[in-house]
Image 1 (cartoon, one colour):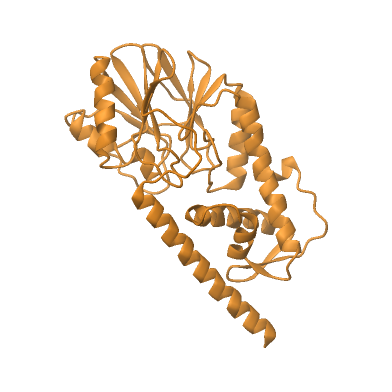
Image 2: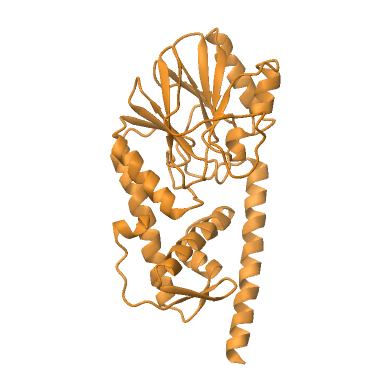
Length: 326
């Protein structure tokens, strides 16, 4: 009877915290408020001879200061990387102003992944900037149908170029299954999409793929990373190592919490491991925790006796670097 009551109370707490986190996320997202203490990012900034960043004007708990979109090229024809969210008039005005001031036009659009803050502005750009002119929009295919008429699906290694900017597509799944990073050959620089952010950490759909992609990025020896959110990264190796260590640290923290309880829900694990994180990002943290728990189940050290409750069953376990990419 005591065990039953305990489990019922755990489930009640799970749903209460889940709902609270969901409301916090929705409120912050709709308000388009950036999280506090973020670095300043200029709305429009020329970052190199071939790269201009235009901020998406969509700050929020996951978008940080907003989505970074980039215009590439030294001539009149440009490549646009990502398109921001839908119906953000400030972004469309900023993009128009850059194109006008440089007497240039968008020749290609490249999408790093399917999330709405990266693909959402396609229709606005098509109608308000391209005058409905059809141009190639390059993207990796997802399993779900996205409308073949919209995208030109490409594979790892595909290249697109304009004057001063040659982009090579590098498959970096993990954050999403369809995630591309983009190698700018002329600069030996990388557009990392949401695989690596300028500050803070990111969420992921698959931990194994994500860790593999981080190792792949580390091996590129990029001179600079232009992230999907946040400021430019010049200390590339330090940042990638920080991301790899962070994921391993989170796994160690989750294991520690599991060992301290007979049984515990995924939300209670999240609240303990991410106790310093705002409620607006707690659902994303829960997703990360659940993916680590899934890995630990495959490792044979955790069981899922019912619903969202988990139990440590393994012995003393060292969480090593190589384990995080299993």
